[in-house]
Image (tube, rainbow, N blue to C red; front, side):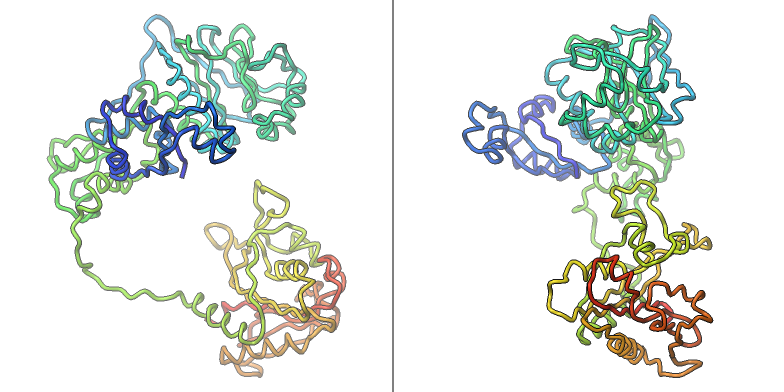
Length: 570
């Protein structure tokens, strides 16, 4: 959950009254927030850097408040005050206001931006009077949004400009780095975009955002009608249009790869300091009464919703409620979200306890129950359970196992954070071998097993992939230990009450040259690999691993493995 730090006295002044710490903690709890800590700047520095560093720091009391991750409207002082005031009084209305003396400003988006950041939205805040506290809150809100919904500027980047220093219409385009030249924020001279990327590589703040566009052929840039650069999103704004305490009209632009997120961010920015627009939703009081478990009048429910920043009115039929959803409440998506707010305003502790009309007895999923039973018995057989990552590199499931990545049916991650997490695993074997490699100094033999899901592409599923529960075990010692892994397979079949034999029993079939292509047994040593059949179906394989596989996982001794699909036994 995001944490918002606000000055206590400034908060109480904005709320119009003072609270004791206990009273404010209770108010936060009623509204669905949590007062996490009461501290000061001096206390924080003293705790983190020592008393010497804290000398001269402010003693002003700070409230650190935890807010829900989807309540972007509570990430600043203004949003908190508005939410808490409305909880006790009346919801605000938002509307768009056209400028009285001129045409609305325009932001023109060119086709070149589709290659880098294709979306942009903008708005103007007019006749703003900034105090130092309000200015600081305005800047802090941008940073909170950048770290939260904007995903560190990868989805959305916010730019704010003094409208009186620039002139529209504005143009959002993309150009080669060498063609962009301007004076960036708080710098003394002009730089090209290429020079800026080199300059900010050592900047403790901006260097974290360079990778977003650094490798692109063109960089996004916004110009005004006179060719003045407003910003090069998502890196830096121009110095010419920077805002200050004297700024009266603020031009806000949001460039993005996600248009929905851009609209949410723009709404948050403008509604914290002005009124904008509204949406309406209609639902019945009976729906809320049934779902929450209360019996309240339509009028009272409308009042409850209004307390939660959702201005509501009873319609002419006396049963339906028309709810206005302000842009600050982007978390309201369905009727159930409105119902939840009604329950919160009513008070969860005030909802009467009732006995359910139906009784159900919870039960494990059969697959999970089977997995738990097998885990206990495999551990009793002397094997140690491992729990490995569900994501891995392409090399782990392909090259290291002597397979082609196209044959693995692997689901790839479109934007992997690291090379270690590129695909969802298609086998448990690679994870166990990496675990063995990390524990080579442990006494031999190493007996490891894992019962977990792998992910396989499956066009018959609505999401294009499916989970498959598998059992995998490895035996690592000075000798291959094929008989050990074979004995473990026999024990598993005994536990599953599958008898040896053809037909309804189980048997293994050597992977010879006649059907090796069917088994795709390149991972195993030739002539020492077998396919496992149970009840007439192929369920897995066992054998001694190929020496090249051993070497690629940086192991030095032979290893045998067992891999079984346990979903066939349900």
